[in-house]
Image (cartoon, rainbow, N blue to C red; front, side):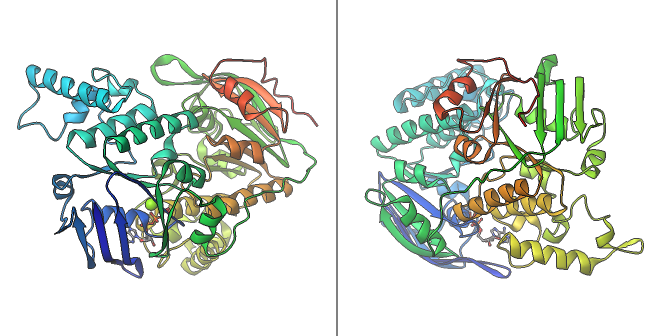
Length: 510
Ligand SMILES: Nc1ncnc2c1ncn2[C@@H]1O[C@H](COP(=O)(O)OP(=O)(O)OP(=O)(O)O)[C@@H](O)[C@H]1O
Ligand SMILES: [Mg+2]
């Protein structure tokens, strides 16, 4: 269906794609895997007409083509599902689907009805659970993704490119996505799928192509391939997949939430009377389906969202109404879940992003001025330690691959010996090597007496790292367990609100 030959793409100082050959068969699910910065997104952007290759040729259906824009790609039947959804919340599903492909002028009533009908047919044909008349603002993340997929199908795509579609989904939504992808395959669609979750890749795909540093390492069938084989192909050496969790004696309470209630949208509190305490040398994991108040809870803790009632204490000092800056100065680091909005200033150079919010530290000052050299040598060290792949620390953060952007934030937040680290989805978008590294850093920080609050949609990660686990559901802490006390199944029941226990006494076992 698609043949790429010798595709090469250079950016200043880096060869993102180095003579890549790739064949994708009609009706297969073809996964693309590789380390952060290996060139996966670049290759797919070339296929979708967002970038032009410097060298190489593309054939679609046996015919050589030049794909100079997404419009051309779509005309050739190639569609890409956006990772950052581009939907208009106040519009209905159907309106969003036809947006951009409607004839000139706004939708007339008749047109809207026709579009709704067509969208309904598509949903039926592919078995997508979606109501065309529903307003997008009422949809879950998984449903919004379905809208993006239908949008591409509506435009007649036979080839769908999905770049890390599961990164934003909770496990159940991943299952639903896979059901949908299999249906699409049954109906003859071709799917190219990028993911760092190797279990998923092995489960869903027919064949897998591994990239390393811009080159193809090989293409293998999923059947008969193991996770560690894939990992080794990606990284070029065997990768350890087990983490040790040695016992650590927890110390004093560093971070405490006492019965806090936090405002959400539309007057209803997003967080309702949550109490918890995290001690030095302890990782407290919060499990929960995204959208159950975790985001607002973290924002309140770091001083970015007003607290309606209750108290927040850092080392026993009240910071309930303190500013974000004041909280940070008390030694609270935060890896935010939304790296583009909160974690980075994308147009700014990597060296600036690595010290963002910390540039006024004495180590970076020379008199009243920022000591550029000190900052740069600091940045160089972080790049080395966290294996951030880039051509130069002078490039803007937006020129980094998704995973490498995440590494910049992680490096910064670990750097200034915080007492408390609030880490939201710290390994999202990271490859297995980088994930393992960050998880080790978290355990090392714990061993050194840091108090870590870990918020992760990845249940496996929460279970393997945490000393205690709290489950958030509908803005409340509905259960609390010590390490080893709860199975993933049990946690799942609490996470979906099927069961609850009285939790949140805020008293930590010592
Ligand atoms: N617009 C750009 N300008 C400069 N360099 C870029 C640009 N886009 C990508 N690169 C570089 O090209 C290389 C490949 O990046 P790409 O985004 O394709 O990686 P990836 O395999 O998708 O990684 P990840 O898993 O982290 O998303 C990286 O070194 C990246 O810094
Ligand atoms: Mg990418």
